[in-house]
Length: 65
Image (cartoon, rainbow, N blue to C red):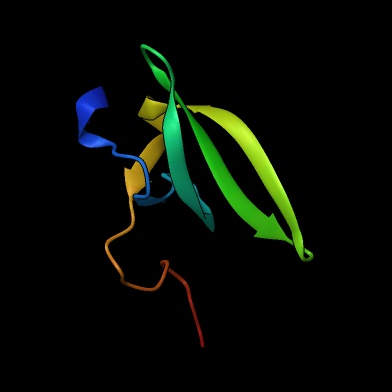
């Protein structure tokens, strides 16, 4: 995915799965700052764009909710 495809406020997740995150901003040419909540506390991490995908609104693979 091209770096410019991620916009602030986009809902993203790791390609390998995990929590939904909000893409906050571009951190550098190939990384973005992502935010999420865990146990009621806000977490943040700079993550490679290559490891992210936009959320498509579908449940993750293996979800049994």
